Length: 485
Length: 96
Ligand code: SF4
Ligand code: SF4
Ligand code: SF4
Image (cartoon, rainbow over all chains, first blue to last red; front, side, top):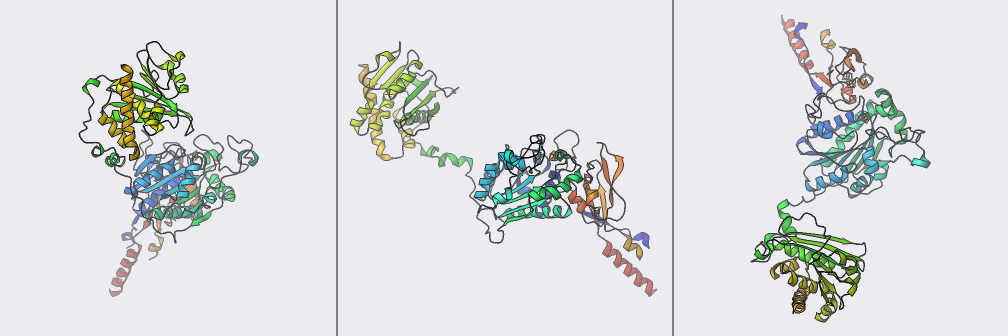
């Protein structure tokens, strides 16, 4: 009878479905991770994969991976994957979660990544209470780069860059990320776990699952710090490294829950998803229906071979940048290739300011205007600075009664008028830039009034200016015509 | 019916090509039924091996192992049925 009693067994603990069957990083060894024997990343990876399986969220999980030994998350997890620049995983995760609120966004980072170069990103993401789950693997050292001192390195711990051991007077103290973030209002769950022995490992698995579950429940920011062995750079056997985590590392980084507001936290409404790409022109007010009627997006036949390079220069506050912008925007309206490149100092007013504008029928190679066809100099310092750059056959529009004799250039034509004073007489001295624009349009013959109107409508929202700007442009045209008589 | 008691609650399978011989499972197993074998695998690691009996199916070695699929723990499923079948058998015996 005993021969009939062969026991049947079924798998109770096996490879998680959230992992790929094979890892296609290399041609061979496709069934092995790249981690060293006994690396805590491996255990943490398994716990996260198990949590994803158990919560049934594999098809809506997006994992944002770090730079460091944990970099290859996308080779292992069969979920949506993004690889972030060093330290920026939290920022990337923020953007992903905000634009895809229904996704479960998990940010996986090591201590070099999160606690050093990414310290600003994690601090602010936690402070904003982003709806993400952060798995923070702390092994007290920079591993991938060969064992340098990390912000989390223990006092006295020897590393490649602290051969005598970490000295607080020189390298500061180990950074306590959980304690630091627990001073903030927004985080919902923060816990530090370890991989130092069986008990710790089981607790770590529970905590990681909980942190992911918090997001599934819509509760908010959760972070789990995992004290993790790096046998290779601790220069220990895997078993020794595990014990070191428990017996030494834990003294500096006590385990425990530092924040738990999961009971009182209300599931928050998901943020509104980012608008679809095709709605963006409408939001920016540049959709087709916003353009004036009867305005075909083609330029004049006469401008068939247009390539106009303009430099506008003056003081900040004189409308230098706006003049250039109107020109470029009107060019867009006329179906031309355009570029507008502002260049200004930190001052909002009275600093020097200039911009480069190009209008062309062909693709523009560079937005830089080194030798302009037209220099619009709104004051004398601007004139003196750029006068030599105007090429022969070009024009200078100068805002001043007298054009300085020593600025004359062979082959360069000049229109010098006190544009600011004339604008003042028209109604406002600040319309001087539009007078100069009018003169430029008349002189070059580019663009039609309908293009300029469309550009002004988009750039100058205040209707108070509309009428004055029109008159200023018209007066500018007149001044140019008069000068030719 | 002593043979029913002898069935181990768990069984262990090690994928010797994935195991890296770190020894963490050996350390973790409460009844100490795993050892590093003598055999070197393809990559030169002395890999973990089940001693053959005594596994309780607790799964701790699986959690302690850093490799996704090096360890698979199996648990017995038909023990209840075995006992039941025994009882049926026994009553049949008794009725005979
Ligand atoms: S160097 Fe350290 S952290 Fe990196 S894979 Fe090896 S054991 Fe893991
Ligand atoms: S399942 Fe438990 S008893 Fe069985 S080998 Fe693993 S640790 Fe040992
Ligand atoms: S813990 Fe995993 S990798 Fe390490 S010896 Fe055991 S089976 Fe092999």
